[in-house]
Image (cartoon, rainbow, N blue to C red; front, top):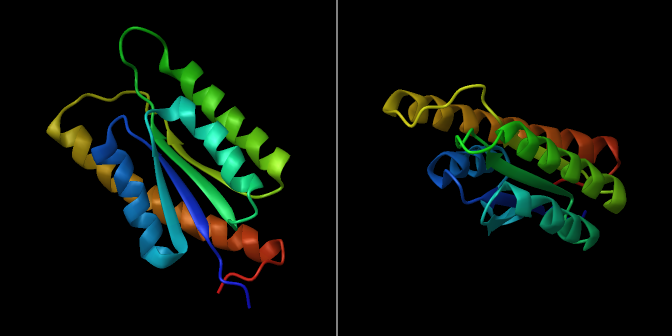
Length: 144
C-alpha cells in the first residue's frame, strides 16, 4: 500500500490566519504525510502547485491564502486569477489541486474579525483534507 503525501502551500500575507488552515488540515491527515511550503503571496501559489503536482510525489496539492481588499486595487481579480491558476495546475498535472483561497466580502483588521477568520480557516483546512482524501479514493489511489 502506497503512503499518501500531500503538499500544502501557504501564502505569507496574513500568515497568522492562513496558517490555521494547515493546522486544520493536519487534524485530519497525519503531520508526517504533509509537506508545507511557504510563498510570499497568493499569486505565487499556482506555479508551485503545478510543479509539485507534476512531480509525482503528491497525492494532492492544497493552496491556501487570504485575499483581502488592500484599498489600492480590487482583491477579487487576485483571488480569481489564483483559483483559475489552481484549476489549470490540476488539469495540467492530472493531480487534485484544492483551494483554501478565501476572499471575504469585508475584512477589518480587528480582534473580532481576526478571531473569526482564524477559526474559519481551521475548518476550511479540515474540509480540504476530507476533500483530498475523498478525491484520492475516487481516483483509486491508496490513501493509508
